[in-house]
Image (cartoon, rainbow, N blue to C red; front, side, top):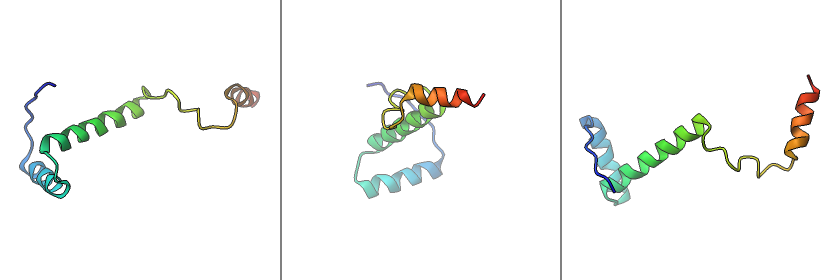
Amino acid sequence: MSRILVDLPESQVDDLAVIVEAEQRPRAAVIRDAIEAYISQRKRALGTDVFGLWKSRKTDGLAYQQELRSEW
């Protein structure tokens, strides 16, 4: 695990302290979770985390594609 140094405004440090106290967890763990959530959100926004998105659909992917193209 790597260490990094991050400068935060005092207001963010105060807000973080409230979360740490409420969850009774180490500050580092809360920060790691926040960074992981941010990275996951960015991956979805960039479309890099798309594997398996179609698995919950009941429509065949090829049939869906052909239906869309038939509109052209």
